Every structure is written in structure tokens, then in C-alpha cells.
Image (cartoon, rainbow, N blue to C red; front, side, top):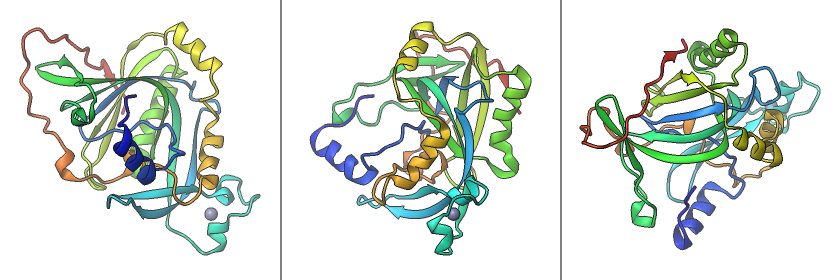
Length: 262
Ligand SMILES: [Zn+2]
């Protein structure tokens, strides 16, 4: 992914941390298209209970540092220093590895002033959206949702298809606050992840077990984890409207999801 340079990179590094875990980050209206890198019944999908610590970046943005509660994770076998200190602001998170192909945005790349390219336009029905190529293994890392409503869609996919592999999926976020955020998981179509991509992932050591990834939140120190934007509130000014952007002439068409998982 293109990154800012110089002063921008330096600022991001200090505010978001160097040990940034590779997570999918969606804002309101964004849709990520991906293949799961988990069958749904292996070590690459999992959940945990986290101690939540509110933080503020030097730029003034608030976010929540999530530290795995190892006592809860191991059913009391391991000691948790935060529990011992009486800390009890906790939340549940589940995570799964995916290969993210691209994210569709309602608006164009906001970082073009920092030397980044505009995103390609695509047509979704009558609306133009902006396609940011990702092409990376990332974790979807998110709250279970009220009454397990978000997690339930992932469970439904496992139950319905027997495996999460072999299909192109879309996860869409609407809303940006604690109260109005919602996520929808949908199948776009039945198609395998390209063999070439699968081979590259198998060769690299990026995709660790979810347990290992969750345990990394313990060792990563006080200044490091990146804002978990899937679960955070955002400033309303960053939002684009669903109604904007009329379709132009020769913009390529993008397939709509075939089936939602509810
Ligand atoms: Zn604990």
C-alpha cells in the first residue's frame, strides 16, 4: 500500500505505532472484497476477551488499545496482570485472516495531496465508487456486535457452505459511531483464490495463528498498537454520502454481491 513519506511517515509512525498489525480498516460506506484464508474451523479464525484502554494520539485522535486477557483466554491457567490490577473495562473481539483484493470507497483517495494516486473509478449499479487496490493478507478484527449480530454472519457462512474457502466475499461498513455502525457480510461469487497468490502466502510468514496475533497485543508495549478502526468512532467530517456521485460514461461495471448472510 502506498504510504506517506518524510514528515507524514514520521508523524504516522509515532501516532499509530511501529508494530502495526495488518488489519482491514473500513470507514462508513467502504466495502472490502476478499477471500478468506481460513476454512472457518482452523487456527486462522478465533476470538478473545480484551482489556480496553482508551488512548489519544499526539494528533488528538482517540482510539482504544486492546490487550488480550490471557486469564480469560486460557480459562484461568495463565495470570493476567490487568485482571490482577482490577482492570475490568473489557470487550470481545474475533479475527480472521483474509486476502484483501481491494476496497471500494464512496469518495476518491483523500491523500492525493501527499503524493498518492487517485483511485480507479468503478460502477456499482448507478453509483460510481473508487477502488483502492490492496492485494495483501490482512486480518478482519472486530467486535462480535450486539447479540453476536456481526459474528453471526461469519458463523452463518461456515454453516451454510461448510468452508469459508472458495468464494469471493464482501464486508461492507455503514455508519461510523458506536451506535450506528453496522457490518454486512455477503458472497459475491463462488471462485477460488488464485493459485499464484495462495503460493505466495504459503511461502511468507505473515499469516500467523489468530492466537499468536492476539497474544502480540500483550507484548507490543504502551505506544504501539494501531487504532482499530473497525471498532472505533470516527469524525463525521470523514464521511462521504451514500447518495452522491452519479455514474459517468465509460466507467467499468462492478458486480454486486449475490447473497447476503444474515
Ligand atoms: Zn485479564
